Amino acid sequence: MSKIKVVRLSEQEINEKGIRQWPIWEKEISEFPWYYDTTEHCYILDGEVVVETAEGETRFGKGDFVTFPAGLSCRWRIIKPVRKHYSFD
Image 1 (cartoon, one colour):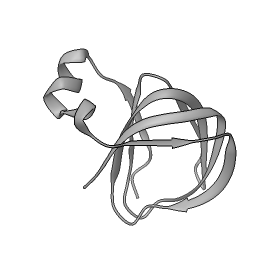
Image 2 (image 1 turned 90 degrees about the horizontal axis):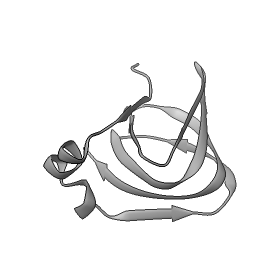
Image 3 (image 1 turned 135 degrees about the vertical axis):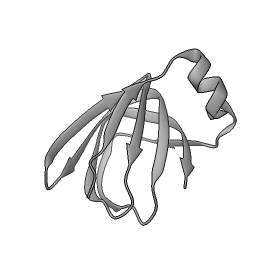
Image 4 (image 1 turned 120 degrees about the vertical axis):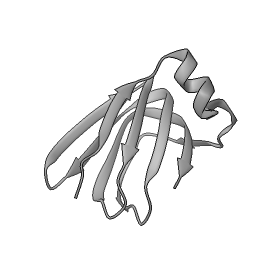
């Protein structure tokens, strides 16, 4: 299974992907298990998150573009309240 990917996008890439038109999800400081049955792409507007998987921890925050592969089981730990644009394949 592929791993979580975290990258920085240019403003041009953000516009080309239409990210600012995607829905927004918000969540307070919390911790919960999650399973991805489809691939999710998200652009973090605010916050700080640590996602724990069998392979280890991935930390990301404001300005990061994150891809979660289908089939991933993980645990979300929201350190600072998060706001993100998201899209599922």
